Structures are given as structure tokens and as C-alpha cells.
Image 1 (cartoon, rainbow, N blue to C red):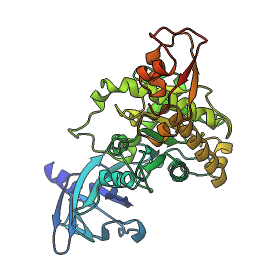
Image 2: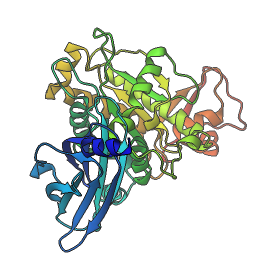
Image 3: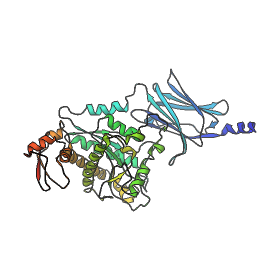
Image 4: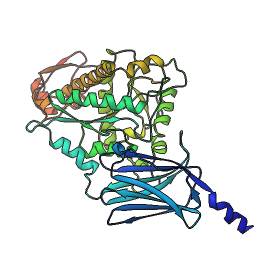
Amino acid sequence: MLALTGSALVFASEVRNLRVWAGPDSTRAVLDLDGRVDYRLFTLDDPARVVVDIDGTSIEHQLSIDPERSGVIEAVRHGVRNGSDLRVVFDLEENAKPQSFLLDPAGEYGHRLVIDLTPENAQTATERVREVVRAATTGEREMIVAIDAGHGGEDPGAIGPSGVFEKTVTLAIARALEERINAMPGMRGVLIRTDDYFVPLQERYGRARNAEADLFISIHADAFRDFRVRGSSVYILSRRGASSEAARLLAQSENQSDLIGGVRLDRGDDMLSSVLLDLSQSASLEYSSRAAESVLTQLDTVGRRHRSQVERANFVVLRSPDVPSILVEVGFISNPQDENNLNNPQHRERIAAAIARGVDEHFRQTAPQGTWFANNRTRGRHVVERGDTLGVIARRYQVNVNRLREANGLDDDVIHPGAVLVIPTGS
């Protein structure tokens, strides 16, 4: 019985394909398998190589790579080892630190062996985003906007009726939005994903934190089971239930990105279970809500809105405890008309312009002291509404309560609905 089992293992598994994605920080190689395998990985020097031995596995065709997308990988070759095992050798342009893990089937993919290669002298994602911030003009501080193009690389996101990928649309809009924001005074855009590669959800908001972003915007163009559903929406994080069943389903779908794109889930540094308890998130959520309202208002000038109010759901990508974060659904790629619009460069430019206007309007009202916006803010007025207090109004306009009293000649904190308060500048 044991002999038969051992004989069967000669062709127990098969490598069906190799896919390579190169990002600015690392290169990812993915071997598609027809089942779960045992493997060993090691590196060799002079020349630099990564060797993967896979037990009881075969391959029926040559492995190939696209030189334009191969990153640190110079070539790949394979051969039979010990009569029944497969050896795959990655020839590298330079020494790189490998990390490997197996993934179970998810989305359109089956079993996978993922190998991430990070060059020893590569610039890290943290260094890259901080370099963008340092390149900002000196003097009055600019507000930093982290722009996240949803999905990427292994994870295509939703796919439209004619085959348009969500990841392609979101990257195009993110790049257009970065250009718009950088062309406007007082702001600087930082792209979380600069090309077609995968970034885990937690790392996306982590990069925004490293950039010390004032606002994080994640751009998506999702699908829905009813192809008639279309239009734009804006979401913020919910620490409780979703604001609608559609919002819950959307968050559930988006949160699958790590499973599809490929993330090692046994990491010890995962903070997702505790981040929602961070007290600083309460203030961040209030600020996020106001930013979302401003962006949603401007999106109404571009085309149909799917939701007339800001929605809430538990999106992993919005879980930063201290960076105000919003998720913008620019349309439903499952709807033929929305897909056609989103595939149109002029329409994408109009979406980017609308989001930029919303961000600009938001910062003009809320940017803190020391920023370009605060120093160039026109003297404004606020009509007191029921439930307003001086403290609430001061936080809304990012001004000091004492300055607010002085500007309005108030001896105490008593204010009445209908009263008009002058908002001091540069406070």
C-alpha cells in the first residue's frame, strides 16, 4: 500500500503557470498549482539566484517571463530533481530577500505558491512615499492626500461586461487625481499604488500613515449582481453595522482582496483586530464624514449618484486609526453604461476633477494652523444651528475657542440658533 502511494506521488501535482508582477519595492512570482504542495526555498550567490524545490510535482511546458514586467528576475528555468520533484531557479539581477507562502483557492485562482523578492538595496515603500512628501514646496505646509487605486496585480477587481478591469480604471483615475491635486495650491498627492501590482489592504493605509497624510482616498469601481445598478457613491468606515445591505455586501467583496491578491495571513504584526478600538479614530471618523460629504456633492456634477448620502461599512482599507479615510466608488463597472464611461479618458478626468474640488473645498474649511489653506482662508461666517456649541464650531473650522470668542466679542460660551459668528483666520 505504501509503495503504491509513493509511486502515485511521482506526478501528484503540476505547475500550470507562472505569473510575475513587478512593483517599485519588490517583485512577486506566482506559481499556479493544481493542489497543495510541500516545497523548500533557498538562495545562492555569484550569481544571485533563488531556488525552489517542490516535492512530487511536474511541469509540461517551459516557464517564461515578460522582461518588461519581470522586475529583479532576469530569467527562470526548471528541471527534474530526484526523479519526481521539480526544481525552479530564478536568476536575479541582484541579491534579493525572498519571502514565500502558499495560498488556498480564492476568486478565480486555485492553489498558488507566492514568492516575493525584495532587492537588498531597494527603496522601501515608506521611503518612497516620504520622498514624495519631502519634494513638496517649502514654507506653508501643504495638506497631503494619499490616493489609493483599488486592487492591482494578481487582484483585477471587478470586470465589466466587455472585459474592462477595475484595477485599470482605478489606477487611471488615481493618476489623474494626483495631477489635479498637485496643480492646486496647498495640496500634495501621494500615490499608494503607482502601477499594476498588488498591495495588501493593511499596507495601503500603512503607507498613508507613513506619508503623514491628512486624507486617504481609496478609489474603486465595483460590480453588483444587478447589472442595471449604476452611479457613484462615497463611503466611510463603520465601527458597527453597515448603513445598508448594499454597503455591507460591497465591503465584504472589497475585503476579499487580500485573499485574491495573495497575503500571508499568519503574520504576527497584524493590528486589524485592535485598530478599531483606538480612541483617536473617533475624531478621524468625524473628519472623514465631512470630507466624504464634500466629495459626494462634487461627484453629483459629473453624473448619476448611486447614493444621495454618505454610506458606512466596515472596509478594511479604511481602518487607519489616525488618518481620515474615504472610499469613492466612481461607478459600477458591471453596468454597461458605467463601464463605457469609466473606459473613457475624458470621463475619468471629469471624475478626478470633481474629487479634487471636493477635497479642496473640505480643506478650505478644515485645514489646521500652519497650512497654506489656513493662512489663505478668507474670513468666513457660521450660522449657529440647534445643538451647536462654541467647542463644536471651533473644531469644525480648526480654530481656537478663545480666538472664536474674541472675534465675536463673546464674554461666555452662550450662543443661540440663528446667530451669525465670524470665523477668524490663521487660528
